[in-house]
Every structure is written in C-alpha cells, then in structure tokens.
Image (cartoon, rainbow, N blue to C red; front, top):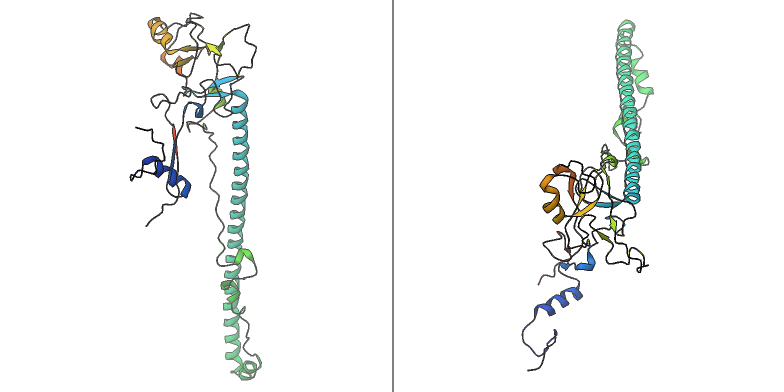
Length: 299
C-alpha cells in the first residue's frame, strides 16, 4: 500500500489537516498555535530582553530579570505615573476654577434678581404716586426685541461656535493614577528593594571561546556540579544569591537548613524556586499556546 500524503485528494473524507489548512487560508475562525521548545525562553534569560542576563536579579516569585532592563522598566513606569499625575492635578485645578466661576455666577444672578425686585417695587410706588399717567406712552415706545439672547435666554441656549459649549461635547475625566508599579510578568507589586542579586556559577571550559549566548552549557550548580538546563529545577538562596538545583535543596540543604557554601542558617523563605526554562512540555511551562480570534463564517 502506498503512503498517503497529508492532502489526499482521492479520499472522500475531509481530513482534520485539510480543514485546519483551509481555515487558516480563508481568514475565518480562531487560530490556535502551540509553542515548542524554541518558542519559550531559557531559564537564565531575562523576561524583558529575552537574552542571557549580565547582571541577573530575581523577584520574590522567582522571576528572573536583567538589572538594567528591570530598572529601565521601573523608571519608565514612574515617568508615566508622574505624567498622569500632572494631568490629573491639572484637571482638578480646572474643576475648582469652574466651581468658583459657577459660585460667582450664582451670586451675580442672585444680586441681579434682587436689583430687579427693588426696581420693580420702586417703579410701582412711583406709578402709584403719579397716578399712572404717561405709562401708556412709555410702553408703546419700547418695542419687543426679536433677539434670542435677551430675557436670560443667553444662559440656557448654548453657543454652537464654541467647542466647550456644544451640547454633544463631553470631556473625559481622568482617574487618579495608581502609584504602584507592577511586575510585567506576574502582575504583583514590584519594588527595587525586593530585587535579589543572583549569582550563576559558570562552567569553565578553556577550549570554548564562544559567546555566552551561543553556549548550550553555561552554568552549573556550585554544590553538586550538575549542569543547569531548562529541564533541571533550580532554586536561588536568598542570603548569597547562588543558584543550586532543587535536588541539592531536597537532599542536602533541607536536612540541616544550612547554607552549603557559607554555613549560615536558612529558613524556608530563603529558598526561592527559579522560574523554569522552555522545554515544550505542558507539565513544565504553563503558557504554551496562543489563540487569535477571527470572525466566524456562518452559512
């Protein structure tokens, strides 16, 4: 029996591969893609620059960053927060000025209403004293105005040629920005003082003169000498920042809870599991698939 290809046109069955291929070419339906080993970063690479760290630091959650990259990220976020805070303060000052102007306008209208009432009372008393003579002539001389801006209508009718007074214009209010800086990976609050310096023990090979990024075996455990790879669980010891394997932690460190290099006392908080590198296995890495929503073709 001959070997069939993935596009077997002689078959009457619409295969799964042909269905996915046609859906991708048509532009309809959701696209799903699973990452492989090359699509996920290595364990010793920065989560921002995706390159091997020159000055590695780690967060409380075991997320590795290059010190230069994470400090640049924090500074950019602080500048953005300060810019938003200035816009918010400018908006607050504008609202206070508008409230003060409304208060002055209310006082002015109250004063005008009082003056109109006083003039009406004075004119009524004067008319009573004169006996109403000459009232007909004065009423006939003052004609009714055809303008739509008299008798207080200028306050109720908006000016369509002024953008701030158009009926459909609504300014969006800026919310007060949060001054907390969050981690770009975990989304938890991030502070510079919580960053811990990491010390990787490099593999010394005099014959290998390539760059650090091109080496496959870059670091090792300082206690056991095992090569650190993506499939080897590692942990960072907080007091010194050394990276050791989890096997070393379980078999050697947790017996006496002593630092294997300095002999100092350790606690459970001093052992920080390092984020695993890219292996392509779902049991190791959490996010190994991506999805793009596209319109659905309906019959």
